[in-house]
Amino acid sequence: MNHFNFKSISFYGVAICSVLLLFKIVTNYGENKLKAPLPLKQSYRLIFGEKLPDCNQPDIAILNIHQSGVYLNGSLLATNNNTQQTSNTEIHPTLSGRYKNKNISLSGQVLNSVLCKNANSKNKKDYKTVNIQMQVEKQDNLSGQITVSGMNKAIKISATPNQKLDASVKLNNY
Image 1 (tube, rainbow, N blue to C red):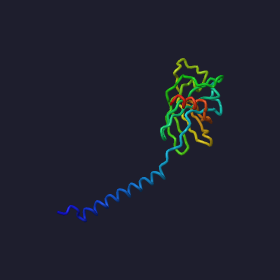
Image 2: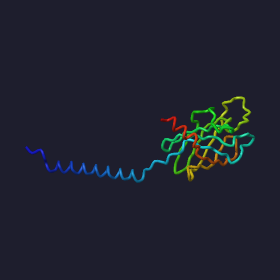
Image 3: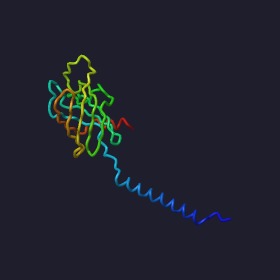
Image 4: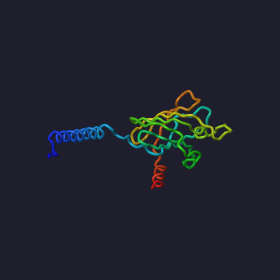
């Protein structure tokens, strides 16, 4: 009784070689063509190019970004100009977006008091819809524009990594 038939051995040999070849092709494609986006900094000092109309807006705000591959979550926080520390008015991400080909797109709701310090609203939880479009430049700086609901034009913005907050976040995430 012969258990090793030439046809069976050749069939299994060809099947195994085909699977190995397919695995090699897929692995090479993934290593050469599929690249994860570069990581962004977690905190940026956001500088507005001009003032919002009818608004006593802060010169600097903090943009916190949490990245998971190409998907982004973030929050825009006000700063205290005397100490440059972030306020704790909002700690949950309210912005969401994507990061693709060095372009960042974030949109969502931001407290009106973050954008405008003289918010005349009686409700302290008054939100504005914002849309942020930015490009990553050299040395991790960002530049782009922000559109706020109720405004007709976009405002230019630039952002630089906030080393103090990034260092404190890394220390707290041990």
